[in-house]
Image (cartoon, rainbow over all chains, first blue to last red; front, side, top):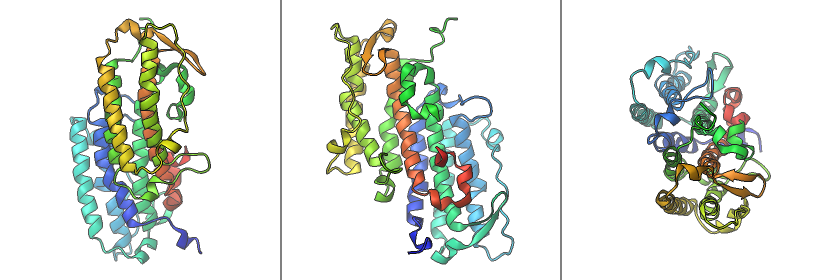
Length: 180
Length: 180
């Protein structure tokens, strides 16, 4: 069995992750007071509110356009660099509820488009050029889109947990999320 | 302002976290195939399925009984040690869906009971005896119950993410959840 054959990737499994994120975030954060939502982990870190804005920007400008770049017949395979700070402008004046709804809408559109693409097994090895990494495959891009969601779900849980860090007293020793 | 006055704790904020966890877990994990649910992070680590069983056992045997121990008039303040491996027996033969529903039911009962307790600000400083830490306050216990939920939400996202670790290729460098 070659390494290629041992790949864990499947488009269906990837879609399972991408599909659950909007509803997960809605339940995880939609009923919270500002204390949990607007605080961060310290200077140059993000709040729950910031993270949701970041996810919207990724779904609007990054993931699916990169899929199209890889699959297109054009020889231009360079990805547009992603703006990791765009949400600080884009989210202005919006409530978290509005952001969660916006994310749900853009994700749903993206998944509809993604499912409609005639992606063949061979397409998964096609590449685009990442600004930092150079050539990356469609398989890696789609996998990273899913893991990126999970990364930010973990981050949101961690940011919230840290607001109560001092309150847990000695239990901090047993709570991995407070030590990461 | 004393340290005491600077406490971030409130019962309402704590309840906000405890309330969201069952629905969050249902959406995060309820629609996933076994690939995401039954794999762990390596020897002596837990799968998503194991973590949900652990949360059920905590809600059935640990958190609220310890609240009662602290608040009771009895001089016996020693907590019963928590069995961190009970779920391996208790979950046997159950689907993840069943566990998620069981968790939702037991958590709802616990929150109903917790809200019915006449907890005064002074009660928050009352203590019980933790098997490892010695005296811990009701404030610390309730805070830890909430942070423990968030710890395991972050863990679930991490365990899932790691199943795709090799698939992300060079992006692993940007995905904090894969490096924790």
